[in-house]
Image (cartoon, rainbow, N blue to C red):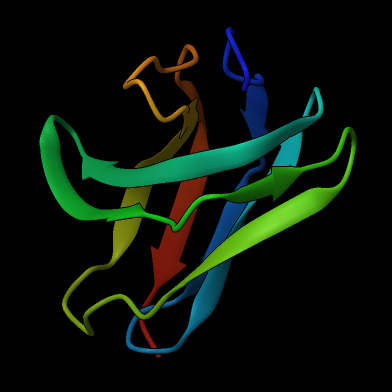
Length: 103
């Protein structure tokens, strides 16, 4: 069991509104049974949130969560990620820029 959730680092992303993209992040420590919570915000409004199933994390590997943004979502957003362990403890959230352009 992990006492302290592994830290993650969000990676900047860009994509096209209405088309699938991957929100990528790097694990900065190992862990098992770790869930990842991904959030995309437009200002303070959350436009997407997903929590993954528990799984392993390995140091310096790049992980991703798929997302198909709405065709209406165009502009600059903030993509954040944090890790969660079974008892509800969360790592600090890290964020990166996300840019979506029209088709």
